[in-house]
Length: 243
Length: 141
Image 1 (tube, each protein chain N blue to C red):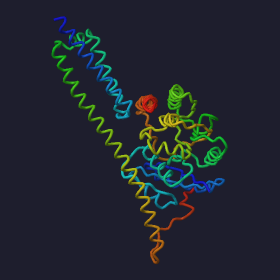
Image 2 (cartoon, one colour):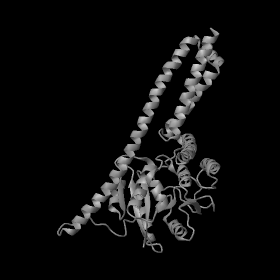
Image 3 (tube, rainbow over the protein chains, first blue to last red):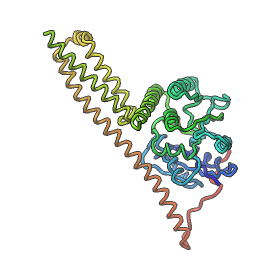
Image 4 (tube, each protein chain N blue to C red):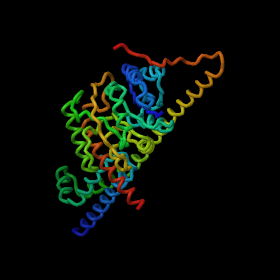
């Protein structure tokens, strides 16, 4: 029996969290893969932790607010330390439907499975597509990533991802705390991991707010672009250093 | 007069270039978090620009109605403050990182402790372990 930890970073998600965990339980086992929901409460001000404690899930209760990246990393480290074969990230606000999980699992268990599998909204272009401004931003970041890695990633900001143990080891060492998704693609590439995309449908969030608020969009773009450039050069230095 | 201002220009060019290279090195080595990096790259580029473009400095001091010398003093003073601020940025970055590691490990340890305590409760007779429904708590709809 293999183990898959589904990491649910939750910040003030008291209204959505129970349904997210419940939807995961409804999946049961997928093939020979058992699913463990892992809720990471990122120091919520509401009753998220209390509700999660009453659910059948692992609860990691952070004492300080670490941001989405820190929360996700905590969950991934839990998965790695507890011998999970795979881990997946699923947002706590109901944006990522649990019904898409089986196709992730099937792909990751197939022959020549990638190390990192990213769920993309923009392959089949169905389901919630986000606003025009966001799509433009995502396309721009995808272009930057292609420039530095040669990879064509259609939905580089998607947090709906599945990682194997090899990838978990990379993430356990370092993961960005703010807006980690685009930057982590470069980390995976630098570590020599294979990355693939799979078409998924997403929903509009049920509760909570996007971690990317509209007024912060410019800051987000600048910061993530810089982070990608720095991650790229960071690899160059390490390669030079180790000969 | 001319060789004097020439000398000072070379000095300011060298200083601002060193500052630029130093901040770039810190960023690339990962000693500076990207949110501070934006500020430092912009700032040092500005310093480099003005040490090359002397007329620009003259232009702005004329515009603001100040002589060249005080301007220079300002630059040196501000440069010192900047270096100090850079130092602070590194310290804060490191603190934030350490904080993250601590919080993370604390959450992981807490979970392990709770699991252990629960295991003990179940072993000792008479004490009821907190009930966990295997189906989870469903919401309507």
